[in-house]
Amino acid sequence: MNETEDPIVIEHLSKNYGGQVALNDLNLTVASGLCVGYLGPNGAGKTTTIKILTDLLRATSGRAYLNGTDVIRHPEAALEGVGAVVETPEFYPQLTPRECLSYVGKIRGMSNDAIASRSHAVLEQVKLLEVADKRTGQFSKGMKQRLAVAQALLHDPSILILDEPTSGLDPRGMVELRDLIKELKKAEITILMSSHLLNEVQEVCDNVAIIDRGILLTYDSVENLSAGQEVTLTVHTLEPVSPQDFEVIKALQGVTSLKRTENNKLIMSLSGGAEEQSKVLREILNSGVDVVSYTPQHAAIEDAYLHLVSEGDY
Ligand SMILES: Nc1ncnc2c1ncn2[C@@H]1O[C@H](COP(=O)(O)OP(=O)(O)O)[C@@H](O)[C@H]1O
Ligand SMILES: [Mg+2]
Image (cartoon, rainbow, N blue to C red; front, side):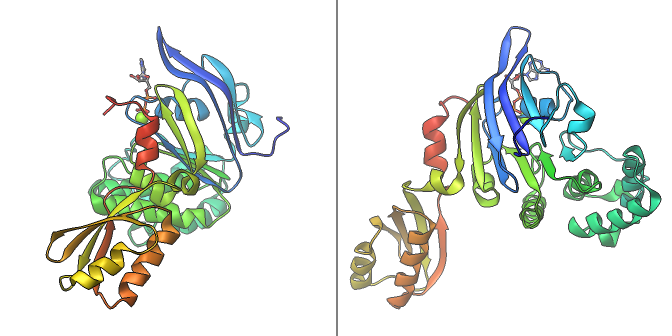
């Protein structure tokens, strides 16, 4: 057992594929109860890390501990309290969600009673209770992905690891999966999810670990990474903003630039974080301007990310 209480501890983890370095001396510690986004462009090493953590791949060197147990030396014990969705799930089309869960529960050595009660609980969590006895053959990709999460949650793990959980989903499927993760966050569970989507990590996660070319570039809270970054918003108003109101908005604290692009549309740059952003909106409304929408043009951590991740990866 490792001395630390932290659920995920990665120490000097490296992985070479032949001569190619996929992970280079990675160190990362995730504290209990956090939802961490593991963010990086394609080929950064996210899946490699997650496969090592879930014993699907051997590390070249280094250590990883899950709930204090060395996953490389004692994979079964280390993964006892872990649920993971790593590869795009495929289910036998003739099986129902309840049957899929029952199968997984038996592999995990759960009793029939435990399987029945946990199946009900996780199907409710992933919002598949209504289709619990329908064949998965007709399911959308998003429903299958949520079923895969249900399987991962069946034995009530304290750690959930997801590799690109929204990848390949349509916009609605993405929203539903993100909502599910946000719901899971309210429980005590520690979540590590990889993503190449900045906005997703910003929306869903507490902390973000940014990796590029096998090297961990930063690990910090989304809040800290967004702080001090300028955000540009499109402000769509019901009526064209009068020249006087335009000047009032331009003078608001935090507003660094204001342009009129169309009659009813302003492009506004703001410094400061979410608090500043909401304060400015309130003041615009207070001045009597009716706002239809108030939309950031890009994620607030985008600048931090682009600054860290070298160009040419996309
Ligand atoms: N089985 C493999 N054999 C050789 N190289 C691989 C293999 N799997 C991944 N790689 C390489 O390792 C690097 C990291 O890949 P991966 O962990 O899949 O990145 P990500 O999940 O961030 O897109 C990439 O350069 C990729 O080409
Ligand atoms: Mg990957």
